Structures are given as C-alpha cells and as structure tokens.
Length: 90
Image 1: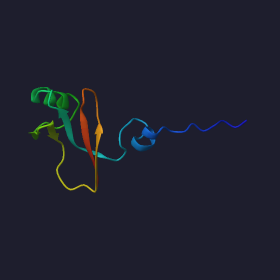
Image 2: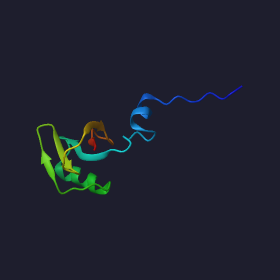
Image 3: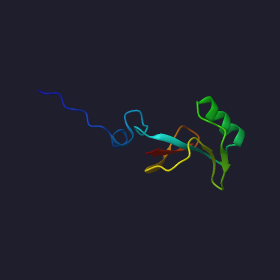
C-alpha cells in the first residue's frame, strides 16, 4: 500500500513551513502601545532588526526596517506579546 502524502495546513501553504512568508522582507515591526518604546527597541535589537527609525501612532510603536514602494504588503502576527510585522514583496 502506497504511503499517503501528508497535506500541508493552510498556514504552512500560505506562510511556508516555518510560519514565515517566503521571499518577503520585513518592512516594519509593530508593537502594541502597552509596550514602552525602550522595550520595543530593545526587542528589535536583540532579534537582529534595525532600531533607528521609530514612529508612534495611536495604536502602535512602529520600527521601520525598509522604506520604499512594494508591490504587495501584508501585516502578520510576529513573535509574542502582540508584535506584528509588515512584510513586503517587490
């Protein structure tokens, strides 16, 4: 009897096996306002992200990674504590 091919979950099909969008680049990290700006910058720094360009909005602390025009952008859950990432494809 032939082995059945395991079907990928919808998340794995959309975001890849490791739960990240394949081929995309993180454009910005979004931290909820219950984080302090210092904690958000520290988290980004410890995890290898740029920390020089920080904006505060009503909802988020946004740490920009790249600037420019992307063909496609999606905001996804990223990490713990309500962190989100804006991912772009060119």
